[in-house]
Length: 184
Ligand code: HEC
Image (cartoon, rainbow, N blue to C red; front, side, top):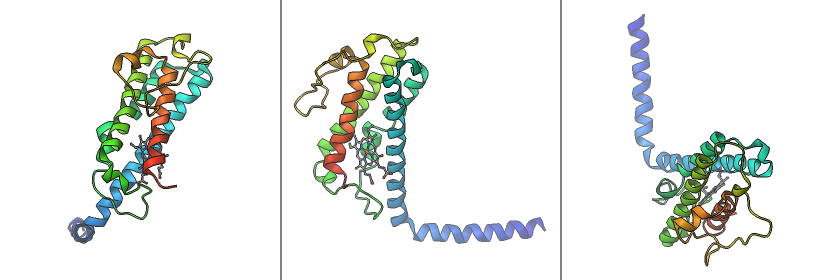
């Protein structure tokens, strides 16, 4: 009995395997699209968690803030760029073909996103208790960030600004990239 079941399952596996092998090109392309879309959704959820804590600092918990920042850090930079490394021609994708032509710009925005996420992680590490006023933006604080409005000039400047400011600049990298490289 056991042997029959095993044989049946084995037979089934071979069939599945054969299907997978023949379907590799398009399924790999769809996988990478599904993966990067899932990563994007996870980053959106993490950004929402951080935003909620700035909206009501009473909700601030350093560990949660940090894990949300890390969720973005781990999906940005080269990880994000790598998901758009090849032309994944999938009807599910909203990525624009200009990513390949303007690779450098795309990668730079992906790296900026990571820099901001790293800065937010550091802010949470440095502020384990209640959210201090120094993490918040002062009323009327300028939102400058270089010629593109989002580019970090240097690490020092980034670590000197309030975490909330870095967070807003981080959200600008999302919208900048979407405006340029995502279809509506
Ligand atoms: C360097 C470019 C880039 C950055 C930075 C970026 N995105 Fe995206 N995002 C894209 C592209 C391109 C797509 C379309 C992907 C596809 O459909 O293949 C996308 C898609 C999405 C989607 C839709 C996912 C789906 O299910 O279709 C969400 C949500 C999203 N991004 C949120 C964010 C958030 C939040 C941030 C910032 C924390 C961010 N993105 C930063 C390029 C970027």
